[in-house]
Amino acid sequence: MKQNDGFTAVELLVSLFISSILLTAIGFIISFGMEHMNKTSTLVDLQYEGQIAMNQIKDVFLKSNKFENVKMYLPDGTEDSKVYNGANIRNIKDEISVRYMDIKFIDTYSSGTHKEKTFRIDCYVKHGVGVVEGRVSYDSSSGWYTGHTYEMGRYIKSFKLKPIDSNMYEAKLYEITLVMEKDGKEIELKDQIKCRNKKTKP
Image 1 (cartoon, rainbow, N blue to C red):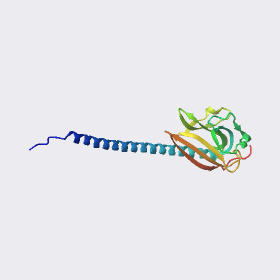
Image 2: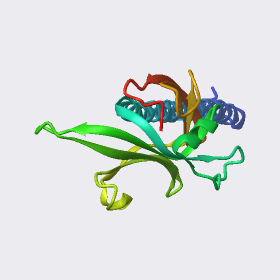
Image 3: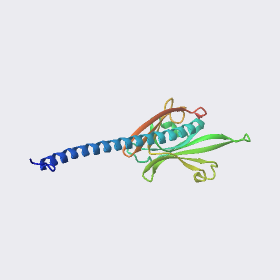
Image 4: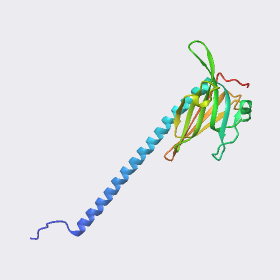
């Protein structure tokens, strides 16, 4: 009687072929799962950062009483050389991509005194990442950089502003759009805000 001590070459080849198919399938499943997890993580980051920035921008708009300076990006992504200020902001009637804008508001101290302050919203690329920064100037005679500067949000490709009920200067209702981008993924957040204290005259 002949004894079978092992696998034949054909059986080994079949086993290796089946094993390679299984390993390839497992590798594909793991790779797909990791890719999906990374995409989900990126979208969560964008939603989180976008909501933080949106809430802070809306808070500034709520307190605003007038706009002072507005500089925008052109459609090709370059900066417009012109700065709109004062009543000239009336010339802006459509949605713009904001480079920076200065917003005036009245701050009330515990002593009951009032002081007008200026808040600058600055949108630009910092270390390869789009950010929106806020800067408060407490004394207009001291210059901008004496105020506290902080990051309002990152991964912000563009901050768009559209007047709803009038031109940019006289409107009280605005639509805010934040275009968020990270790792090739892009989302858009929109919201509307009403500036209750806004003056409509220079």
